[in-house]
Length: 100
Image (cartoon, rainbow, N blue to C red):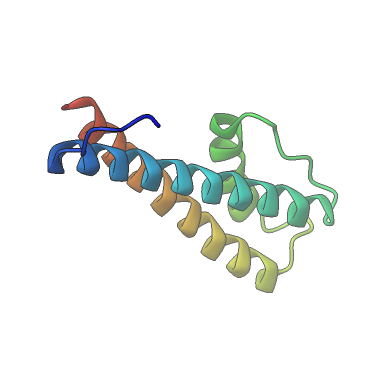
């Protein structure tokens, strides 16, 4: 039988940061895929790279003549805000993780 040493509180904190960050990254990927799927139904092709998607969404939201209904633009604006919050949290946790 192999015994494992007990983790310190700091080690547990670091592990928690990494687990939370990984979960947020999964949520962000799901949100990106949701956006890509929804806009594809309107004939828009979302770029695969998240940076390019970040550039495309504001253009789609501003383009009144682009074929998106005002209702869908409001919905897209909401999930765009969700994505931005996830991005912000991932960056915050990355900073915390690199401090240790």
